[in-house]
Image 1 (spheres, rainbow, N blue to C red):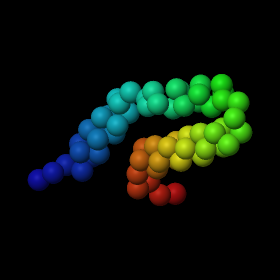
Image 2: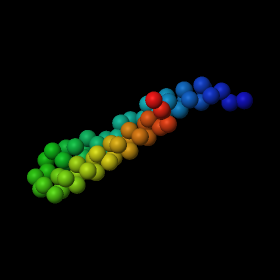
Image 3: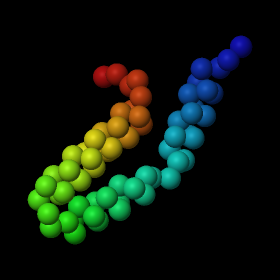
Image 4: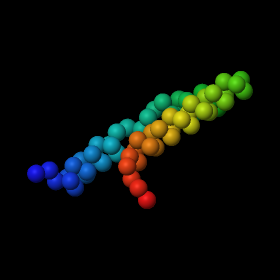
Length: 64
């Protein structure tokens, strides 16, 4: 028999043990240094989408 709490605890520990995505920091730096408005808008949109995807992934099926 599978113990739900043990499985959930193990999965949470693995998820929180993962290093933060270093791509966000480099993209933020690139966004801050960018001077071209069209490229800056594109970078902002990409960064927002990637951060939103990471947040959805980390929250999973949590309901309020």
